[in-house]
Length: 254
Length: 75
Image (cartoon, rainbow over all chains, first blue to last red; front, top):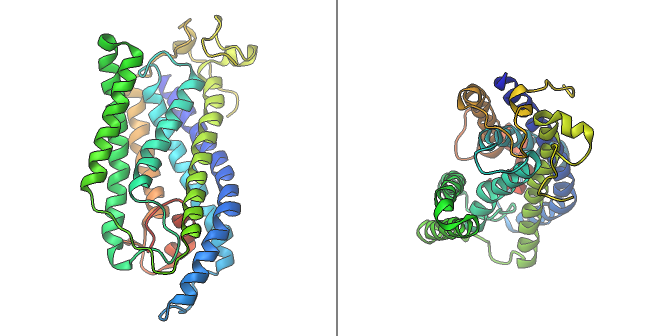
């Protein structure tokens, strides 16, 4: 019967991931695509060897291709996050279904995206040396794995310290630990600054902000939608009775 | 799918905090679906970039914009 709960949460996680992916897609199309086009215009104006046969047209890449990528990404992370949620429920503290979902999605955004992004930010077309692609790919995925492991480690550390330091101080200590270790990783891992000469700094900044906005949209809307759906799975009575979950008033107001 | 099964384990707990789900119930789903989701992410994020399972450039070119905008190293 618990397996049924896990299945229900997994299905809803993937569904919430799809909804979040659709919202992220809107941001990607309207904020991201104009920057990609500008970067490609720079690339074509400055490259001599480019101009081979086009396998997928720009129109397809920026619509159907972009949709495929962003939606699959949303569904996949929705599924993974819902499994992590099943594990975190009741283990991270006394948080209700919706608060747990928002906390998990915030942690996901930080661990999976923001921590790698601050060291290896998203690059538009024309930025990045193809010769270092293997190394950059390896290091990027390493940072993602490191971000997840360190975030989990910080939560465990916080839980261990809580009885001695109290919840507030334990949370601060765990956060400080996370910042310190991530900072050490930043200091020791190699950096790549492969922006070609003449590439607009404004465009690069706008591109990276758009990339960040896509992820913030994705994870935040996932947390909200999934929390709403998860509460209906875990607490069906309270969900139908009204917004105040449970028979007692919740500590989280409105 | 919208009408979910009422769970005795969760309704039996009168507090705000949800009950823990046993690891044994999560593990099979986590293993199969976790791997499946990671394979999907691999195809969006890295296939035909640094490594390739399928030859050619089709996958890379199709998800090209998504890969750039989602922050993966592309080329």
